[in-house]
Image (cartoon, rainbow, N blue to C red; front, side, top):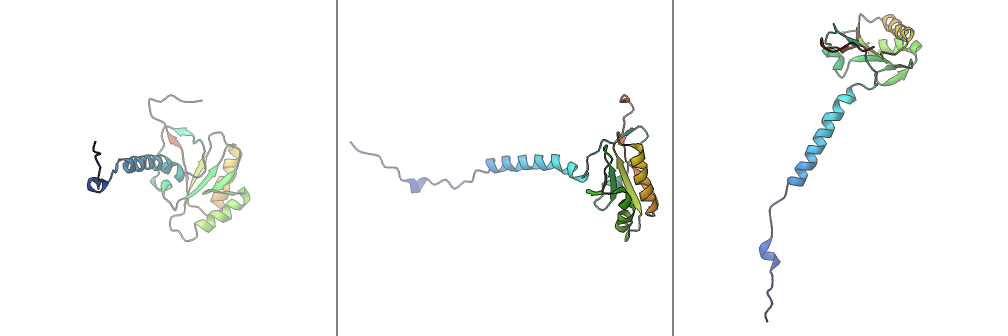
Length: 146
């Protein structure tokens, strides 16, 4: 009886299987596509819905000054929690070297009206020439939520 010997050196597979790498890259791409829009708004608030809302493209820019008022009355400048009394000085410090003195306000739909107006007063006291109130746009066929 003779034994067959297999010589491993002669049958080396030099092809690289890229299928697992492509699978991993596609999963990472999908994860980043889902997470990236969430990174823009550092503070999550439920914006009020308006039918006649205008699109404010500058609000999504990296250097836009954004103030957020949450439903429990906390005020954020960008992603940093600030006291309402300190908001005016911090806004004016952020707008110091800018030509466009515009601030965007994102207030939760269930936020106390007085807290929102306190934030608006502080922003106006900082010398802001334009204040943009951000809302969600309601489609014409969408019912009004109460």
